[in-house]
Length: 210
Image (cartoon, rainbow, N blue to C red; front, side, top):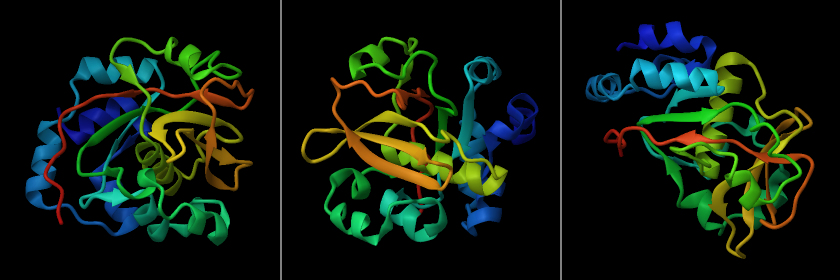
């Protein structure tokens, strides 16, 4: 399997190291590229992913948190300085990171998952599917916007596996097409604009550069 083969299956839903380098100016080492090629998902997994509306995207060569991603690209993380200042001590925005590995996440809300509680939404996922973390989803959304020029989750939100300090669930979405918005939501509460997307666990992380 090669990057070319993956693109022939997923088309625009494949974000490669070359795409990330072109859009963000981040460079991967030869060793990282070789390991990323080795850890590409098998054809069957890619074909099943395409049927389920997945995108496959690479993480950055150096680990990045949501705060790092915001500093790289102010234009797509929405909320204003006051909101970011209030979130500065939230564990998920600093401790949770994406690194040099593949991520496979659905682009659209799982059907019938809106207007449902967290437990009801989880019941809609298939074997091997889990909700992504907030940073995984944010990185994927930013990459897709930068590379493909398309806002994902436009005017909708999804719950993630990340948690605020107060125990509330982190939800991520695209607010009115303006940018990526991060907020909290109660697990037992249903919202008509809040659903869920799924992620699939792939190979362990490639060694990220420091």
